Image (cartoon, one colour):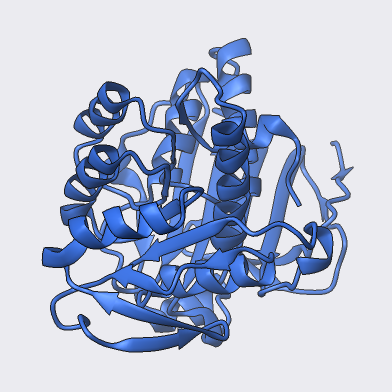
Length: 336
């Protein structure tokens, strides 16, 4: 019998049963012991908006245009960018219903313009702010047309919008030679975890052959599909020898279950990402758990600001490479 205690520099959760899964309730413990040859790595990333302006040089004034500023992610990015000392351009593209409105976010007034005006507006804005970086958190149905426009104008952009035709997107950017950071996952710590999983899968293929896998993920109720992050992690486990189909992912979207069984704080029901991956050996004597729980959207907003700072540096240095992702941002090592 082996008892393993692993110290994790984050809030750790105490164990409860959730169906056939191991679920967690938040406690103040810094570690927990797992008996019966069971190793568990679990951490809750509870993120709030943090004013990091003191970390940023006072003379830093990169102009940032955030499209879909009235969306939840758009608002979070604007607040994080303003706190970081970036210059928020007072214009944004929105839906036809939002067009003409002026909204105040993070102490900045922003005028929302319609999609029909976007080419002229973007061209004139880029002329006024030649160091402009555009941030896109719109919708999958609009993302390719938006990228077409950014590349036509030649404005560098950071895109966290998921979906769309990614192959077409990359080809458009390559053909236009436009600087861009493209990543459906902007949470730096989550990206680092994914990178570690990919390294493990590449260097130790088949290490978990014969193990069974259970996956539970909980997101806000309006997210109907399975998480792209969960799929990426599962892909790594498959390379490690685990037999698992994506349709076996257990999606939790009912708010009552999220609070009572998963342990999601009620104030974060509208924006959270709780993932649990449970591996069990063929003889049921060894188990591994990997868990990452995110409350709120600040982790993604802060990662987006780091991507903006990274891209501005690449543009300024006239880097040969033009298309980047969040792994590139992490490797740069200059995050706040």
